[in-house]
Length: 575
Image (cartoon, rainbow, N blue to C red; front, side):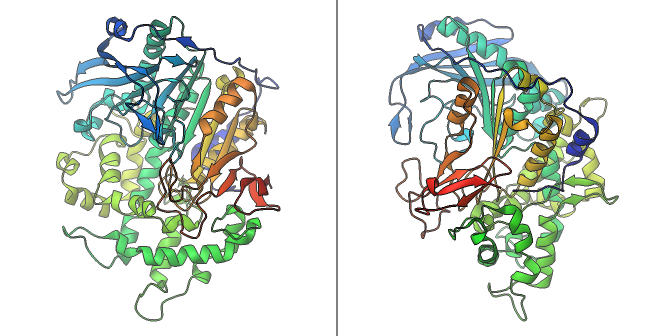
């Protein structure tokens, strides 16, 4: 069980001002999709839709694409773009690029594949890794979905300065999905002689955010929503991460080869393993099995204290202890971020042994300096007005200086701001409006599955838990009739970490939407050496390669009951 007290400001308002009046007692049950045969692929080159240009339509033979060692069946690949225009702000040519992959043996289902990061690339529309599970054994194309992928309205070369153009911001935030959805359904109609019976949207990270935005903005268009590691209030998370840079700098001991601060020296891997081992020593057994996983995150909050349970250095740092200054910084980084007036800005994070996987440092340290992902996202895409220093987009030393000098009280309000050009704030265009009031989706029979790793270092699982608590409150304590949230112990951002991160939430969602089979748990496996979907290097060598666990719907916890401790069947989802 995760956070109960640190609700986001938006969630608090939802709890205080909303009720479940007008909701039917139980959502309706939608009927299953029915498949159809693909018409000639090349004929789709002449497909016509408003502001849309099809640039290619070609047959892709069986086996050209593979997943988990298995050949993907023959399908049609259609490429194109929508809404091409020249920006009056920066003179750049923008368009919403896309590709669709249409299987010859179609299931009758449509999948919008939300992509991660700041987008800018049209990735393969196969419904695979972007669905969030590590090493997915069967992707969406193998399940017979017709799938679309897009660049969200800008190219990689336009990242991140597309944020200077208001329409490009809006497309990235939500309007690309709104434009592409009716076009994609019309293309499916042309391809199969019928539109999709059931429509789904899913993704991880920013793609998971896209999915939850669709649950709010485009509820009439989608029957199933799958969100992994969603940045529900993504600009808040990015600003919160930047607010910690000065803290890390205060305990960093070295610089990188190009002279930039090496914030990872503030808490290198050897010290993160020290913390992880201390967490396991106090929390691993709380679920009944000593197995390197902390299932009961709520109990761990009381059982583990970094000041008490990690040795304090009496002399030099040598990997066997932490200084008092380090402990103070870590405590602050894991705590909720608040404004000077006490207002909650972003949720905190639970301590989890996944702190010792490389991806944790990637988000906490390197994305603030070397890759400049957080500084440029906040500076150009989420803030109004955008940062005037355009060189920061390509000069990591300038981005690093921006991060180190980041003034939280001055910069945080910019994600709420608007101006004459930007009529919607960065937070408004990136977040689901009325995120906890999903009446339309619920009342038409739609379903939501959210999956999130307990060791995600950038998007707090506590923030997701707060969202779900507020959703449940609005829906009269019955949100689980249409929405379920599954924490993944040990998993980092989207995948990886010391976790059982291989699972098929998409199939669970389809069964719930179309057959009424609510997921009481989702089977998850570790990806040890030899895993056909790809091994997870973060899995400890002491774990068997075939370990399985049930992912339990929040607030339930997987507790060991009896039998083989490495098999999911030996665990039960309980309070």
